Length: 422
Image (cartoon, rainbow, N blue to C red; front, top):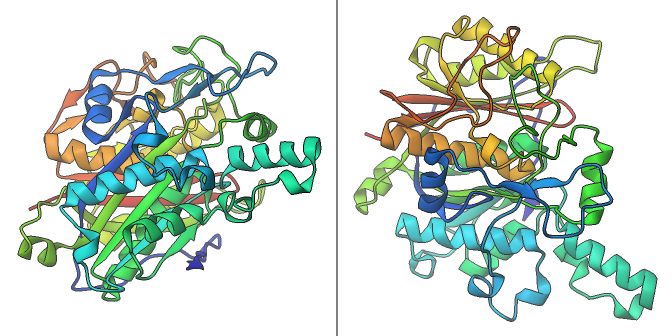
């Protein structure tokens, strides 16, 4: 297994050249704060049901931020063998559940695949924080002989890829992308590259979790968490009242394969990954953010124009400056309020490496069902955010093409274009 990196200078982008392979998503697996399992989460999302609540995974009473998006009703024993439970962080258990659902949804029995024909590419932001905290507490309070040997890998940001590949026997090319919130798209893009090199099946996406005191301290140190205690007012992207974001856990994993091969085995695809690009922002004060360039280059990679896009799934940082920059990028590309924009992550919080892949799953299901999920709790965008934000209720629409945007801490930008199957 290798760790993959992307070349993201202020002027260079990571895109793929022409290929006869058409990457299609044939399976989805979701663990999200407003639903465990793809269809449960999607139904809740269309109803506008939020999973943001007071933190329960630890006592957050002493911290200024007290809200999070936690995956509900998750019993790890129902998804992970008793042998694996002591080896795995909560993040990895969520990822194993999503992986099993995605493969089953695609109708793929990994045991029947030829050796080395399926790989795994995931995204991570920090690894198994909760597992690491527990072992550090054991070290400090009891001594080194009480630290689990599994600490050597359970914390590692590549652990989800490793555990998924071992559990399902997926021994093809594997990797991990570490680009924070942009990682969910970057991982799918890397999987697309492997598909174009001849690997028949890739399991890809991101699932993340760091909802523990150690992880919470890191979130707070970033200075971007909302400290509002009203769940309906804490995370308001594009609003004049935006005051930061709420952290969450979970994400989505997707099965990616060639459209022709999928049809040959009778599989039905959710949609195709038509275009992708990534850029990197220059240092603060050294130039403008490059999200607009990522979007433009992703459309060019797909061979499409801005007029072809029917909906945008926004990054939706929830900070006034970042929201304004994203709105300006969208206005420059589509015109003011020129395309419907949505941020269903207002129901989950920002999921770090799991956030963009969950948005990608939402985009594919929106194309399937011809409906745009809502942005909850935001009555209307601020005057300096000229976007046609879908608020209140889901909006039926004729959808053929969706653009998904993501920005990771440190200047990572990613954009991905998906198109309806068929």
